[in-house]
Length: 306
Image 1 (cartoon, helix red, strand yellow):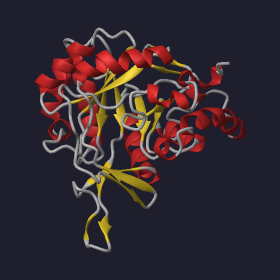
Image 2 (cartoon, one colour):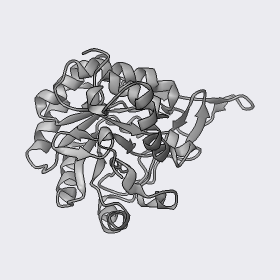
Image 3 (spheres, one colour):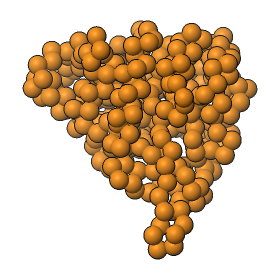
Image 4 (tube, helix red, strand yellow):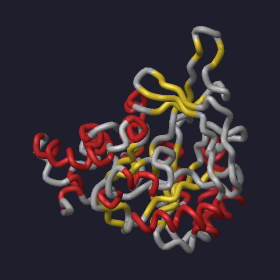
């Protein structure tokens, strides 16, 4: 049974609850049907999709870190054409709601190609435009840190996209509020805050970096304070919805980042630790809300500054 107190709204899209597995931590969704009925989720943010197949970075490309983990996967995926032909049919058989398609590229032309190829899929509700790819050789940081480049990208995609554009920003910029406002002014429909933070580990036995790529993206509880800060600052300066992401591990974390100003919440690394994480959070939310005397989640968005 759907709990109406958990419902939230992203633009015109109504979700049964704000819980969304984050891109890169839940595959293309169907893989997780072995654990629970995916339809309890608010939505699913799919693994990053690129124009051409990507092998990803060399291994080892993941390691543990204090209060988190570091990854340098490098956007491994089979390319947009294969994903449309193989993964989307699998997902539609087991997930009846719409999903968020994370698209990643290094050029405007490739972003345009992705949007054109995915536009026709009715079960995509939002394009999550990943302009903050820290683990690929060429990177996408120009779009993430240069207001002019980001503006040009968004305006170009808005002309052809038939779905809302949510821009996934990185905390690794001088002024994330500036980039958030730039995205909104260019026509973005929402934001996803934040992506991973650069980090590394060194093997004490050999004195060498643990990962082949040396540096990767830190995620998990260690970056939650950074995510809270970004959501808190940006939500006060834009009028478009924000999906909060970064170190959210339990129902209390969900409430905290919604207090900061998030409308929906993505769960990332916790899925890799506990495949039942999202299910548990959804089940726990009503009890935490009762304890905190919260009648419905829509009442608490931005409570920390309103």
